[in-house]
Length: 66
Ligand SMILES: [Zn+2]
Image (cartoon, rainbow, N blue to C red; front, top):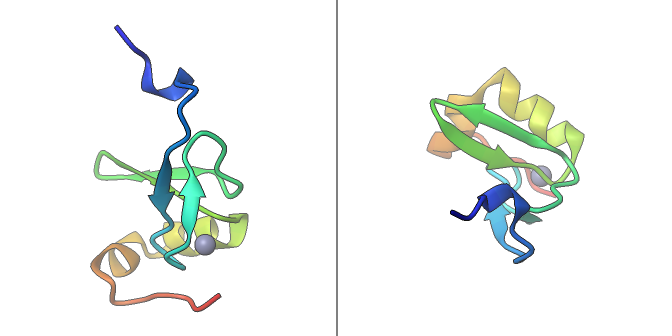
């Protein structure tokens, strides 16, 4: 059985706050979970913003231009 977190393959996810690509193996801004989904962030500021109002960022109601 493979453990995804230890995979050496580099994969990217989209930061829900600023829509940048983030390396899921080493997200500079860390991760947050919301309703069972894991979100990755380019920087701590994006994670803090997301945690304040996750639903707005997931729905696209809010976004931040970088
Ligand atoms: Zn970001």
